[in-house]
Image 1 (tube, rainbow over the protein chains, first blue to last red):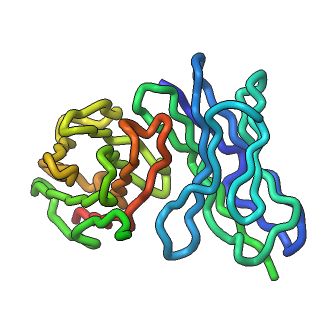
Image 2 (cartoon, rainbow over the protein chains, first blue to last red):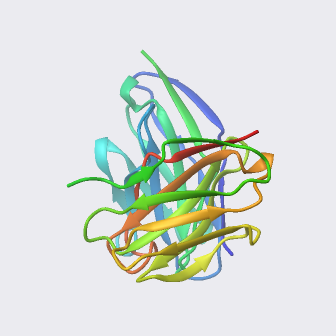
Length: 112
Length: 115
């Protein structure tokens, strides 16, 4: 089964700083990749996804992620964070076995 | 359109008891997945159903079981509860046949506390 590693447990940034959250996975076959976000008091929701094609995918609220197949990575980026981006971010991988695996999550705190 | 609905929101049970959690997917979604979320382990996959059939099961003991009904609603059951079963149980539905190529839509979860 696949596994997912998120390198940062808690990231603290000031507004307007750039963000990059790391995500690596282990799986030998074709994967679909996702980032989900959980804002305080809300349910998990999809931020962006990669199925195929352009490895640089754009999601909601200015987020993007780049799939680097050779590095088994799918890092999340945002050029300039806002206070409202404070949330927990989860990377997820599905290797076509109906088994969605999530990373442990990264808590992002943006200071105003 | 209504989102994924999970009931109840909160449950307190005693060790050794059993519990049933319910999930109603978004209308038109036929795939339902269940996850256990804990601070230490994050989100762990329990099982996924499509058209009343279990498509896959995570690494949980047989005390954890589930089913899906013809209207796509799903239930999960945990028997002989242990303290370690205390967690937030999340249900998610997706439009396609599986979570592989169809994003998940999550409910707010059922918070289970075992004492």
